[in-house]
Image 1: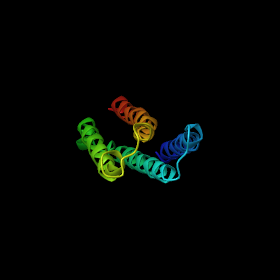
Image 2 (image 1 turned 90 degrees about the vertical axis):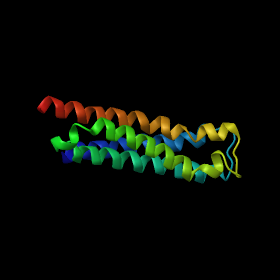
Image 3 (image 1 turned 180 degrees about the horizontal axis):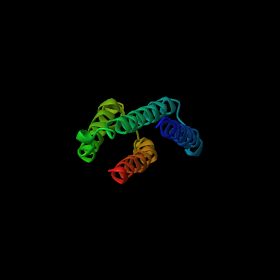
Image 4 (image 1 turned 60 degrees about the horizontal axis):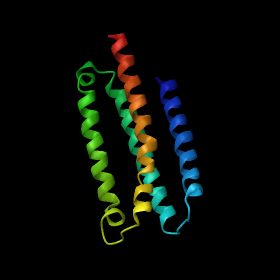
Length: 132
């Protein structure tokens, strides 16, 4: 179990840092206000996804919770989207409105970390079903 946790953390760190450093590098023009916002978006998605997967590793050990993990994941995914929208509301829809290019660029961390979540959670659930 500890080996799996370390592998997950290393993969998240590698993919997250690689994506974070490539993202501003590939932008056409870099604004000073956008890079800190981008950093916050990457940190939010990195920490939320990593905590979610670690919690699923722990919850999958209990048969009582394992049956409900799919529903728990869907609920937490909606919660993650709501919290992200609330935290970044001024830049996405509020008074500090970014251009559509930068607003869509804030969704790149979602595209990076969501597949990682799905891959690891599906492995957790398949691994547990094989043991049952």
